[in-house]
Amino acid sequence: MGLAIYQVDAFTDKPFGGNPAAVCLLPGPADEDWMQQIAREMNLSETAFLHREPDGWRLRWFTPSVEVALCGHATLASAWVIFNRIDTALTQARFMTRSGELMVTRNTGGNVMSLPSNIVTPYSGDVTARIGAALGVASPRELHSGTYLMAVWDDAATVRAIAGPGGIAPVLEALGFWGLIATAPGDAGYDCVSRFFAPAKSVPEDPVTGSAHCALTPFWAKRLGKKTLKARQASPRGGDLLCTDDGDRTIIQGECALYLTGEIQV
Image (cartoon, rainbow, N blue to C red; front, side):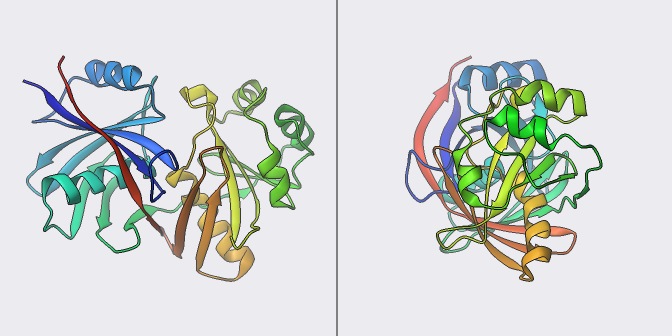
């Protein structure tokens, strides 16, 4: 019997933009090694696996190399599949995850999800020059730390000019981080722009990162003095997010576009 799998581009209203996620529907819990093999075969930044539970859906996320504790774009993609292929009358999807219960609400102009906020604090190490050199741009003005290391530049053009992860992997490893958020005040009508690099997790650059915006949203909301932000992740694919600072939760709205529907035969 085949298992349904979808590829959905999240944080975009048309295919070939945003962040692609695979969403695999399971009849029940599955073997971790098998899920990891499927994620490696799909070779996307995240593959989501979900199955029904009495109060909602169990949801897990895998990169090509590891399971992760939180993934925003694959959560949004999973909700899109539920709303559009499983239960078209449903208005809210409830997910049980390693990061607790997550809710996604159906909405015009993009579904809305509530994720736990990640409050960053100033990073004390003087490594700005190493980070700038590794990314091939000027040194960031400041650094902050949370789940990820966050580097802040003064202008969006510098963040957009980063060619790729370059030599950032050994720098992050030495500092004890596996992910780097590069960010700056926004341009072109956006409140902030960002990029996200996680080479240690087999994701050299993530196209659009919901979990990174759990740190970006409270950071820029406080700095800009506004609760709701229009954010742009300026990766080569690019994506748009509408983010609201809601204290210990970050509310993220984004659209999705279906790219592929298929079956797994193993």
